Length: 74
Image 1 (cartoon, rainbow, N blue to C red):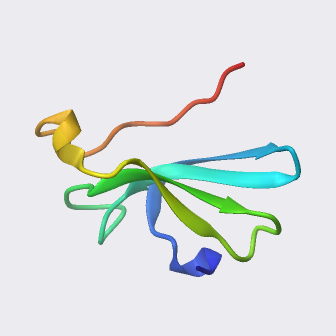
Image 2: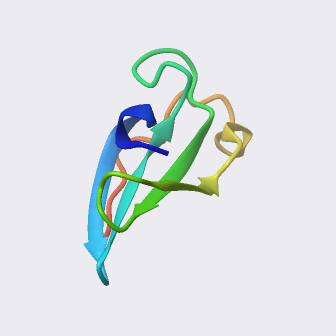
């Protein structure tokens, strides 16, 4: 998957161990409407990404439209 095909809001990028991790709330229209999940996209080069689920179904969050801004702490 190419970077321009990823539609997330409130994104966060982490570089760790030579890989990039792009986290964000995903939806058909990432800036409006209801979110469908929270995903991480993993890349070696910030061009090609592999999509992985963090929370795949927003029903985990009840009626919330978004999960807010992701953060990373050590």
